[in-house]
Length: 143
Length: 443
Image 1: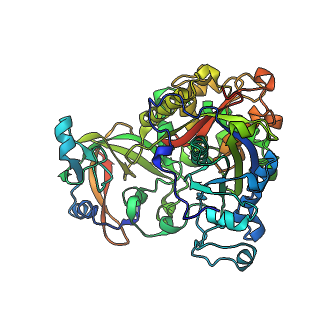
Image 2 (image 1 turned 45 degrees about the vertical axis):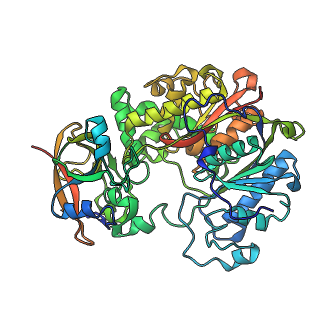
Image 3 (image 1 turned 60 degrees about the horizontal axis):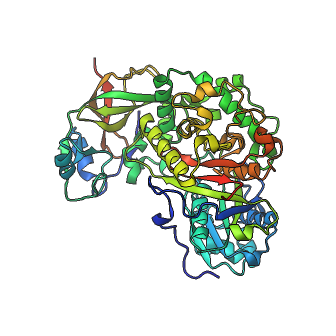
């Protein structure tokens, strides 16, 4: 499916540059990480940590590229022009294995419409967006 | 006249935290007037039906309804946005420019309403010295106006919001029509989760978690549509009075974002609505029976691309706690339930968190199988909401006031012999919104 090309800005440029190298990196707050003893990963990228508000404790961390399908719906009447020719299509929410609280959207390429196996394992792939060639993260069911 | 540009209300005016206790101005602020404009599906681009014209009409109607002269008004609170497409960069229509005093904002009076526009074009408002914005929707503006009156910033205050729907398919302009996306949308828009996607995801989760079926939700939507047809100020009562929606119609409707279909989504439209609020003392002398604000509450969004069902339920639980704490009331005290429904399934989370008529988690769809009509013992959402009357985010407030004043016409509930004493209303989203409890008794 042809997706809109994201236009990076100052704080999202590392994320999109990494996508072009087919790596998924997300922000981790080292201060919150230390306090919680867990990853403090956030997505979408933000100028500051959404938990503590600090800007100087965010570092980019590479993700494993593994996750599960948390939930899905089927889009029949989308406002985004580029996607309308492919309606209906799946919109799934993927929870990352690295931090289950982090959710990312996916069209689940290769999975038939409305036949989405909730809970199934997914793996990271990258798609090229037509307008600028920017690569974008996607997910497909494993196996 | 007010001086300086009108500002958004400071965060301190909203009651967004748990543990604030009973609202310090409980029963000290009253709604005493309601003013509506006509409705339309889309703007016909004549100045007489513009957002500006209809907003002025609504404000004057609210004053007339309250029996208050314009010079008695000293405050104006507006929710300035219009939800839909902005008019600019189109040129300002010449006939519109000839009819109104314009401001520097090319959208003013066309797809946005400023205090400056109102005051320039309503010269009869000679004593307004307090203006403020409550952005988002009428629910926000009500909280701001109520707090402002309670705090003594204004005594008699008009509260306004308006919606304008321009020609063309709603939302399919600007960034949605582009090949690239920047800003916050760069992490979501490529997947197209516009409109009710988030709630479609949450409702999918709800159906599975509580082992209920989409079909069980149909009676709620059918009841919303029925109540809407009994709302003479609403879009469907005015323009499509024959459009009775049956359970079969609902179940056969085309999908928008499965599991949400056409009837789960509110129809964009044009309307302006105003209320007149004043102090408890002044309200005693006014034409209409005062309806008192017993509290207001605000819930703020959490971070992430989708809140999840658990997140939605946590947010509406928080809203309910704040409303009951601020008003000093309990679930058993609430007669009228008018929580937001645009998209329809929002209503389930509100209802269950408020525990209205004993509805608990996962119970809402079972509850809808009983008599939920305005004539019955459980008159849910007596306004019919956005589903019943169109995308405005106001019907729940107008109906709450009218029900407590016993002037809701065919929608007047029968409980308590048609004399309900309390109401809860608010919205828009479960995860973020502004809410209030109304009462006939200030004490």
